[in-house]
Length: 119
Image 1 (spheres, rainbow, N blue to C red):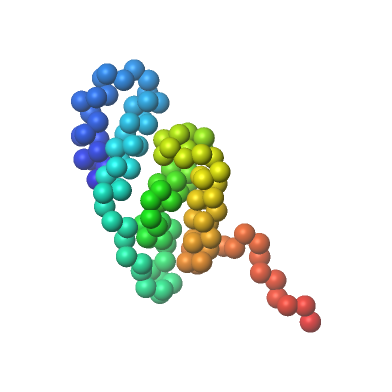
Image 2: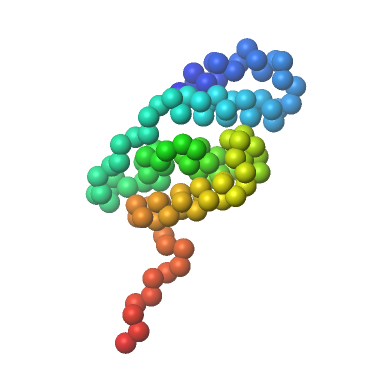
């Protein structure tokens, strides 16, 4: 998918002076290709099958793209919002849901440690 997206944008790169704009074009093309592919079916609940990439793959758009760009540290949050035509609140809400799903899948730790009940 990545190679195909690179091949798609290669003829246009010479026309774009800014390296940042070239990156944005490539990310948009990758996202278009990812959106055309269906989300992966949920994995079984075996601990060995749980992983961040597998869990992200089961998420719908634009949640999947927000998570991928945010956690890969490709762009700052404001740029992610601009690329995806979302406002900052929507990006924040999506990231909150991403974290909740990752915690629910057991692939990241809870935000606050769960304390045992008081005796």
